Amino acid sequence: MIKDCVFCKIVAGEIPSSKVYEDDLVMAFLDIAPINPGHTLIIPKQHHTSATTVPPECGARMMQMAPRIACAMMRATEADGFNLLLSNGACAGQVVPHTHLHIIPRFPDDGIVLPTRTKNYESDEQRDRILADARKRLES
Image 1 (cartoon, one colour):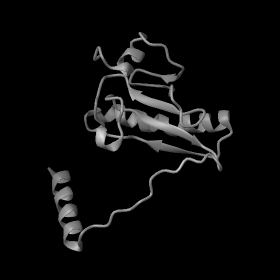
Image 2 (cartoon, helix red, strand yellow; image 1 turned 120 degrees about the vertical axis):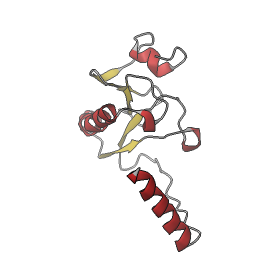
Image 3 (cartoon, one colour; image 1 turned 60 degrees about the vertical axis):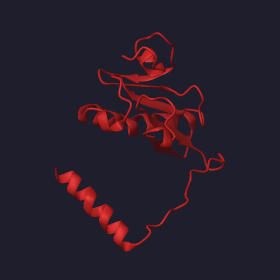
Image 4 (tube, one colour; image 1 turned 90 degrees about the vertical axis):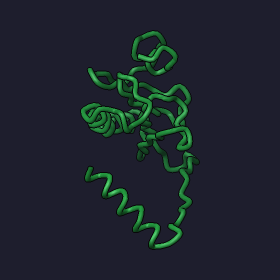
């Protein structure tokens, strides 16, 4: 537990939350600033600032529970769909430095627009270089 982390304080029971689910690895609770009703966060109970440091079994549990919780929230809110969103790092929009997966129930006319702008590669060579480098890193 990190003493200044709001999510660690929620896990420890020092800050109240509207808990949706909890097991030995993860906790899910309603977001206090929801994008839509039913907006839920799934977090690892251990403190991890990055999705890259979450142990595989914990990351798997987060992803295992996401569709179950999303389905429950869709039914509870009568939503038509949902988004799963995990922002990793401040430049990606991560505000709380404790890994968390958002489940955002969606409605046909909710007015929420996720960024859809694309940015092409400078060249085929740039794409191929990035691809080769990533594949090499995955092998090691």
